[in-house]
Image (cartoon, rainbow, N blue to C red):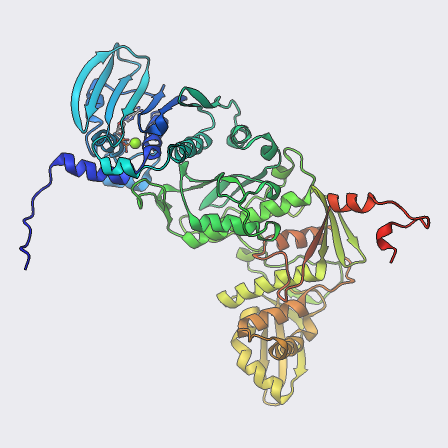
Length: 602
Ligand code: ADP
Ligand code: MG
């Protein structure tokens, strides 16, 4: 038997070294912490100098507030921070740092020299610290701000040092950290130098608006080609807002490079939100392609926990799912809208959708979805709409300026940045109704439109039985009816967002549709899905129905708010794009003597 080891308190230097491993995994992590400190200190000009991919020297120089000589000596102590004083402050973090751990960790595993001076001091302070031991404190001459030199990182942790990857890999990480920080602070000037070569020089933007400043920075970082076709996102609810840019699908790449995500100005990694954004591109990008983006989310600090990871790159929202849905919806919408109009600067933003700001504080609900299509044509109907105020359509701007044209009363045509878009109105409305119906079935709260004249139908024995089985689903969709002894059904209300004219036959035809899909589907579908599909196919506006301008616009808007806007529940396309290349190719053919293009001659 082995003897139980005796418990001892470990020496502070050892504890610091171990903790350092969590904060400083590689040179890039030290660069990140130093950059964040400079930002927290209000610097407007930050310069980073690197030698040997950070293993020989990392220098960060800033023109921020600087530190008093007392703070300069103290800042290397663990849990020394000027950023939080009490536990409540943790709920309300607005600085990048707050743990007071970074400098202590870096100093535990490197030779560090700090020079710093505040505006009000006549001289600066120089502190040297090595493996956690202060070796020198003296006055020095320096401009206002702080310069930190970190030499020989991991000099006393050989195992760590030997784990470093190839210098190019380590420098790539540094450069990534640098770029990320520069994107989040576009008004700050940044410079990065490696082995005496200038890698980036980014002047601070003078734009007043954050998105304009960010766009300038993206131009340098992604290149002007990519920056020219950025899709702007700028939307918010009372819980969350998002602004930033998504790259055009044609600039997607195979690598995840250039995917930048921030929460309250803090860079984060979130596989789930990456997925939300990627899924917005689903129908326009092959699977292996990764779009570039820079997206900034902001939420009340009380609704997000940034303290779940030692290097603060993971966050948790008190409503993760709601955030996922929001991000997916706004990206989908931004991409959808951008495709609908010719791309010129400003055009996209002028269309950007203002999410209704609800008064409920704290609690968050996903973006309001389309609950009803306004009457798509002006027919007189005997319908009394009973719409609860809370479920009125969102504040979505229903009037994009793009020109819409209805072909054969069946297809909606509109111009894209690089071609034309043809939307099948019946297919599109099916998709919208289907997703609405699924949501109603989930929430059990479908809206009902009350019929002015109750409608009587006489059901067969079999249908009557089926309706009794489906009763909870039918009611959840918004049907309001009662069944009498002799199989007569009195229909008093029907789901509210179906096409005008479908009310009378709807219940019967949904039962028929339900039975059909039970017979024809290869894989058995859940009852909810069969109901939703059947409502969608029976309740959607048919081909041959004339739509108003407003109706067309609403239809397209709502389509792009869907989770899967590009196909019907049955798998048929809802829209087709014809690109300019395709048109050019077809016009660029030699004509035969008969005056017809080669292609269509058999
Ligand atoms: P944290 O950022 O979590 O507070 P750090 O260990 O990174 O912890 O820094 C400790 C403290 O040192 C900070 O709270 C700040 O007061 C001070 N400090 C660090 N870097 C700078 C800087 N570049 N300019 C001014 N003060 C700084
Ligand atoms: Mg810090």
